[in-house]
Length: 451
Image 1: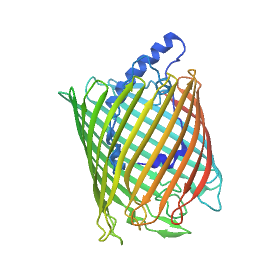
Image 2: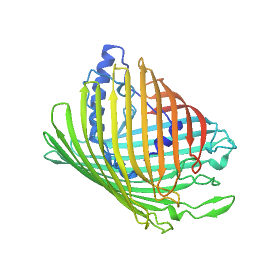
Image 3: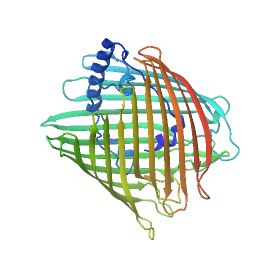
Image 4: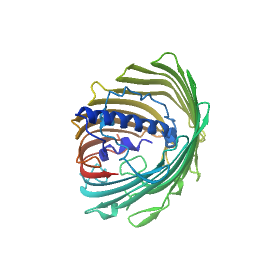
């Protein structure tokens, strides 16, 4: 769930846009298309992505804006092109990206840093229905990565996911999904405990649902999901290593209520529960279960400023005798500010419980902060900058990793379907006496096409 923060130096601004924004006619086209796509996105947010986290970060942050306010996201639509209708009621959205990246420290090590260049090819497609009611959606994508020098780091990843929306009437919606993916653990992350000969490979099986009802003042929702993660064996210096002790099943559930107290303000209460079950018993034992609670407010300060803030409590109890529960202050904050149609600033802060991939610790308490700025220059160029901080505290261990990163990016839209981009970022992690310390710089250039 927090891999996006760990991998900030891989940031890719894969954006494409509808028509221009300068001419009045083009502005009307953008406004109409942004409203239409916003409806499609709001209809299809699989807020069950919290299955990868145990803090269950699934709020519904208000996103409605007046049609005349065109943010960079609306001007440079990141979702897809216009799509290709392949049958009545179904549209196919293909995409393809090719990117070249130079990294000064591909293994994220403190000593004996190795730099290299790799090329990444990422095809993807989305098949979505446009029924008047209900909906179906299928997504598939992958990444083929090839290094110029260190070819042992070559990797292949892929994912498939299907989802369905049923509008049951009386403002009741039922959303469900299931998916399968093949991924690798990025070097330097919590799971990369040793320098294996090749990147560690894992398979994820996920499924979940959410039932929600929207009333005039009160919105209620309940969700549950399951994640089953299996690791493939790896090797170190040619010696095989069995990673079965990492295989884990995570069950999560969430209930939330939002109460509108005015046109611009809502109060919310959210409670969640989780259960972490490792397939192989180890010493110390790593199974655990817990719950979280948040109470907060969502407020629209103006048509251009939206804020959600919540505070609460996290408790995680461990099966290992003698290991005291984790009792932590819980918080979540997100804010979006559009001072002008071509500017957008977002900020977020969260706390969560993450299952540990190292045997000496049963869980990780993660705190993460992020600030992002976007600036549209005309209707062709989008500039971005991002800064973040991630702190991971390992339970039953003195290890504490602190990662800071900054990055910048630019994308230039050659046509409505084709764009070129460039990004650069720096990361620095301090692991103290017990963790992992490193720093590195990465820069990328690439091209993206969508139809």
